[in-house]
Image 1: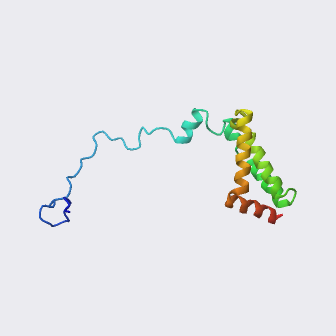
Image 2: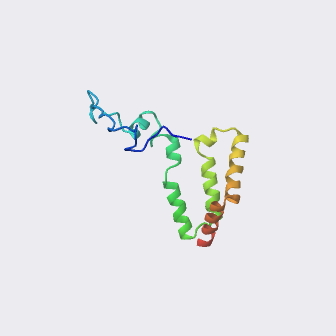
Image 3: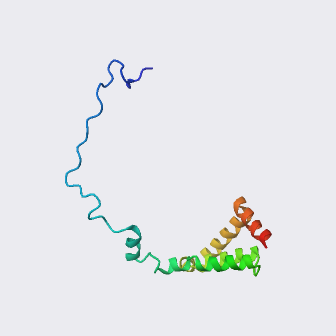
Length: 128
């Protein structure tokens, strides 16, 4: 079997490098650049002012973390709070009752069967 690809310097191999490509005419660089990605999202209603973004903000998670560290709640209560939080987002609330039940079942199954999630849940319980 032979190959049409020739190593450099072999008979029939190209002897010169690829031709130089001329710069594009009228290139503007960064002048006239489009708005930043986050600005575009905010203009489209997906930025932090959006209810979904507010529902997933870090503030409730920080409060939950403080409660865990202070011993006011245990790992199981923290996990329940996280599941409840996931099910109370606007997107989850827009699901049918059957779909929400399926989402909850999936979350709980992941917590019970995924080795990483099981280890994290055990770590939460041990930290108490």
